[in-house]
Amino acid sequence: MPTKARSRACRCGDRAGDVTGGADIVERIDRLLPQTQCGQCGFDGCRPYAEALAAGEVDIDRCPPGGDAGARALALLLGRAPRPYDRARGAHHPAPAVALVVEADCIGCTKCIQACPVDAIIGGAKAMHTVLEPLCTGCELCLPACPVDCIVMTAPAPTTDLP
Image (cartoon, rainbow, N blue to C red):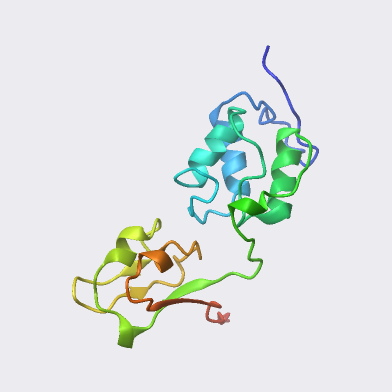
């Protein structure tokens, strides 16, 4: 018999509390995930993790970028007992970070481009690469891919609100 859970936070009256499957619950779970696409949960991105959560195949504690707050939000949505995220999967970094290529050290190998799950790094072979900051999720998958360690994680540039 299918298990039903109702989110106390949802007052919209939809049927998204059905955790046995369906696109609606997968969408709601995916919206709670940080969209880093880092793979620390053991899946190739946030959407496959959301699908596995909706199917009841995995627990809510597998997302380090979401931290404890993310695990609590997933528990609330899915009607599961809250628990902290699994620290063995990686560290939670509450402040956002973005990759920065140190131009003087980049050899243009393209390994960082291949490793980036969101296509935030651009450049050509044997040419310097750069990170498109608005696209970078801070997943850090480019760091181990770089053979010359020319990528550093840094705070994003401050945004200016234009009138």
